[in-house]
Image (cartoon, rainbow, N blue to C red; front, top):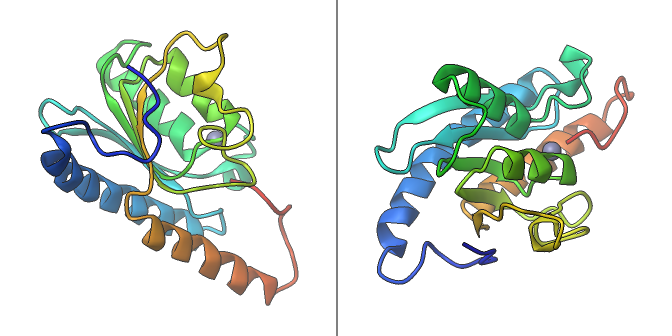
Length: 179
Ligand code: ZN
């Protein structure tokens, strides 16, 4: 296992992965739209069993509405999947998220022993996989999932851009930069 940056699913397997990744990213994008409809930064995530393609949990970003700074889409999806499976470890499962995870979520992904992370848009400001702390590359990180970035990145970034553009037109009712 290792961080593969923006590469596909590996030699000989990238095509099925791409189809699979697009299908599940569209599910995460729908959750991101739900977040936007509630005034939350549009980020969505799902946990998928790569062996069967089953979507185990879907979640939308929700820290403002839940008064919970940890309620990022990834954290909620990991919690729901772990509860459903009755196991705090999600070894080998895939986490799909519309935006590059932050440091908190990267830590949770590692603790959950997620096998693969698929994300959409890069987040140079708050991301912690390719940017900032590059969490999975640190020697103190003891579980490193495979990483595929840039899946439906344009759709994901467009959703974020139009959300912030619309919000800039209104008086601010919530603190900025909640992802
Ligand atoms: Zn996060």
